[in-house]
Length: 233
Ligand code: MN
Image (cartoon, rainbow, N blue to C red; front, top):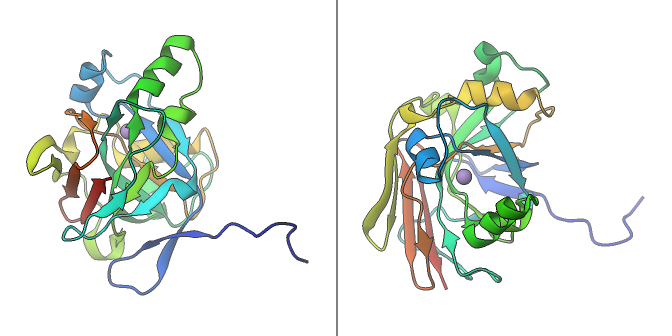
C-alpha cells in the first residue's frame, strides 16, 4: 500500500560515536525551568508545576559543527527572534506515569539545542490568551547538535550550559540550577502524554535570553553534551 502524497521523511539527529541516527518522533519543551529566567520573564519561580509546549519534528536543524555554523534564514513575521539555550533529552523508550526513580532508564542520551522563539508573537499570544505555536513551533525553530549516548556520558545533573553570540557570552548557568530535574520533568510529562522512543525534550533555558539578528552567530555548549552553532542569514 502506498501513500497518496510523498510520505514525510523521518528527521534524524547524528549520534556521537555511531553512524546511525536518532529518529525524532516529537519535540516537547519545558517552559521556565531556571529560576532566574522565570524571574526575567516576570514570574515567581517557586516551583509552580512545570508546563510544556511542543514543536514539530521537522523544526529540527542540524547545527553540530562549531567551525562551520549552520546558516539559517532569519524567520518571517518577527522583529524579535530570541535564543533559548537548552539541554536536550533524547528518549529511547517511554510510557505513561513514569516514576521519578525510573525516568532515566528511558533516556537514550543528551544534546545541545536552541529553542528559538519569535518573542513578539509569543507575547502577543500570551496577551490574547491564544496558543504559542506560531511563536515557538515555526520552521527551523529547533537547532540541535549531536546526541551523546548516556552509555558514554552518563546522566548529567550538573555542568555549565552557555551560549555566546558573536563571541560574547549571553547565557551562562549550570544544569544544577534546573527547577525541575530531568527525571522529575520526564515523570511529570509522562503524566500528561505517553512518551515514546524518538521523543526529544528541550529542558528549559537559563537567564539571559535576548534578540538575535541577521549576521549573528550563536555558539552554545553544555558540558559533555557537545555544541550547537548557528549563523542567521
Ligand atoms: Mn525554552
